[in-house]
Image (cartoon, rainbow, N blue to C red; front, side, top):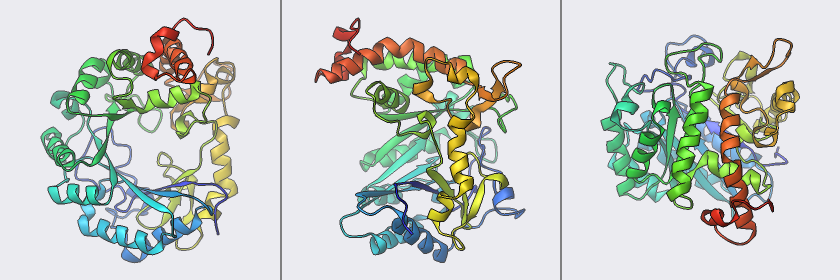
Length: 394
């Protein structure tokens, strides 16, 4: 059975197993749900790996030009390099003629070796590596099981990747600590040669509890505004920040490609190490379990009433505050995981608790993104925005 439209499958072949114990990790204890009480997740079996790769490829719509495999954990490199050699072999076995197979992998970086880096380069993996800033900022919450910081090991892995010319995307978790140092974070990331950066807000534990590491709405908005001001002065077209790229695309009237900013979600499902499929990376729980790939097809689970309802809940459950917000077309209420606070005592539907931060960021950047959009429509580059800054032709 084929899907009528492309979809993404996030594969977690090691489950939540990880060699680090980052304070803010929301996934480390998911094995208690996924593995039904087992002490730790077991690696994905060879049989299940082949079933997963074959079915994911065969489920994509006819005529698709590229199929992207996304590998996460936990820490997927715990599986060793031979596991990923099997992955590449199986992908070549089942890939239809003319279809490009691509791989992206997210790692904490501590287990990256020269051998891994050479393998990633040879097979064109896009590697996302988690770096929260300079050593002091990074090690505040990203620690190993003994409570030691991970910065030096991460940077060693990062250097291996850079030395081999691997395409790298920096994943920076914005938390209560580094959010207070936007200039230092951005300066450090650019100093190590980062050209693709993704900022991820660390929300409330279980969506409700304020924790020492949670970033507040005002902190989040201020962080984005300050980083944007640095970026627009010197790095447009040189450094690509996901939030900024997505926002500029919306000003150009392109559809949102990131679920956080789209009106609907539900087209990026999760495959756990034991074959279980879940609605989303942030909703790996019993209520959002769709089935098992060994018993049901991916497409039947993707198109199930349960998953369609989940995908539509983003727009169906918008609060009145969201519906009346001038910035609704830019975020559509943001990620469901952060919709935890009611905008007023009479409101029946919760709003994104980061809303005030997003609104401040959208208001601050509106004239600049509007000008960049005008520049692009006039066949200029986005960095030429300043000559259109006071234009009304947006």
